[in-house]
Length: 168
Image 1 (cartoon, rainbow, N blue to C red):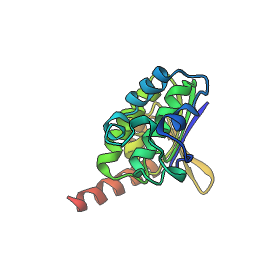
Image 2: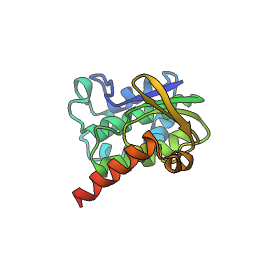
Image 3: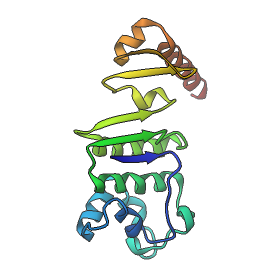
């Protein structure tokens, strides 16, 4: 399995070294292919030594979206059949979230995915949603079924749509 957390764990190593943690025996070409699929080229090509640039302890020289894309590249490289996304886009701004969502769609193709999320946009294309409330399953079904049911999911969805319309 592969995990993409909200708070990415990175090491004071190069971009290439941090991605290679997904599969230590990966070739440079495989690491670079995973990085491209995770939309890393866009920011890495601006770095002084490209993929050989040291990124600082816990990726201190990177933005949140850049750290997240390295984490996704690592998971792509691992190519695990099961992927756990734990609030993988929660701390990102809208622009970075869009880029990360594109990378995630490549990572998740053909995989079993478990998503932990509070943003409804993150789960709107799920096959099945399980809503937990106070540690208990409150409801479960497809997004369409849960919208119609008018329960917790529909309530959270309406609150988030309402909140996003205030921002416009």
